[in-house]
Amino acid sequence: MITRDDIRELANFQSPEGCAITFYYQPSTLLNKSHREEAILVKDLIRDALREVEKHGKNGRTRADLERINQMVDPVRGNGGKAKAIFACGAQGFWREFDIPAQLLKPKVAISQRFHLKPLAAVLDGEQRALVLLADRTKARVFEMVNDSITEKEDFINELTRRGKSDGYAGYDAGHAERKQMNEAMQHFKLVAEHIEQYFERGGRDRLLIGCRDDVWSEIEPHLQSLAKQRLVGHFRIDPKVATPEQVKQMARDHLAEYNTGVKQDLIREVIGEAHRNGRGAIGLRRVLRSLETGEVLTLLLGSNFQAPGVKCYHCGHMDLHAAPECAVCGKENTELEDIGDAMVGHAIRTGVELVYVPDDEEFDRIGRIAALLRFRADQNTAEKAAS
Ligand SMILES: [Zn+2]
Image (cartoon, rainbow, N blue to C red; front, top):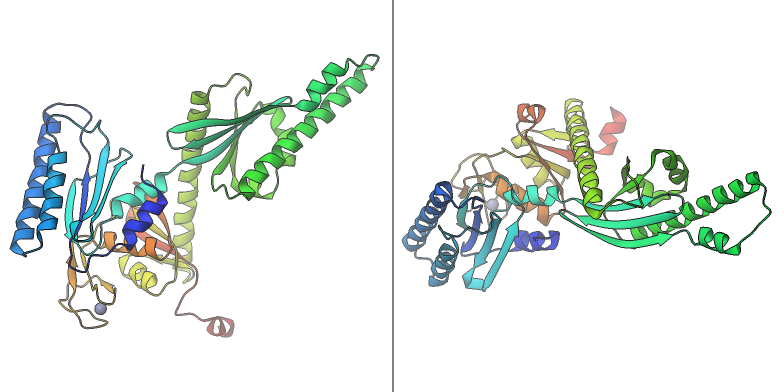
């Protein structure tokens, strides 16, 4: 599984000789005719790349990398349907190989100065991480979920209740016993909430989801502390005593997906609104490119179907839409890019810009499939703003 650190390492890699190989391939799950056709298509792509390498007289190690990749594409056996990504540069002894989550991925073989990372924006953004707490008045269970895997980390019961029972206290009137129980439940929720808060204080970056019976939610909620409140996505109905990890995972994934969709739609609306009032929003490729280069971008929104040709100057890093042979900034030679999206994603990862991947969305298509939320606007300093 590819991690954020892996992706950062790939974004920072550079091959001045232009020998960085990017390879994406998703075999179909069925070992049928279409699988063989796909494999043959990918082998064609690799053969074309080999021909290019020879034409440009690149060194033998690039050739060896491509041949190694070629042998991994097997028209008979699949890769269990898993998408594969390989990043290699023989000249620097660099080889990284990842299974990435299944998604619609076009096969790709590219050789350039940087790795092509645009398809990984979906992987980065699609990561589902959550801490899931199940609680009732006497019990609590804590799960950690990362994508498809869920682990039950803790299972604690209300110690106060247990002690209360073993005390064998007799002679309480009914009201007193009930008050005692409520009080103990409250103490239990408080302890659980402290435990959860400590998890986030230790650096847990996950979202928080809580599963409980409907009538218990109002007793849990007031005890949540500040970090837990910030991370809380919502709560869902479940019986904490009998729920299986598989059920917990399903509920958590559904809730996270719904939450993420909502967050993205809000963000798109915010960016469009800000852009229209000349505020902290940039829409359209030209404007977003300029904002990326001036360091204004806080969050880059990239549509799943965004693609645009462009050029990049590897001397000063300038990216441009115009296919000029020379860089508009430093005058050195430009490199043509089939998709400037790859260069933008790499730039975003290197400079710590948050990436948001927008799957099919009509509103987003209308504004050009690329947008950014800005931290500031370089053309508006505060003095000018105050004066206006
Ligand atoms: Zn330049």
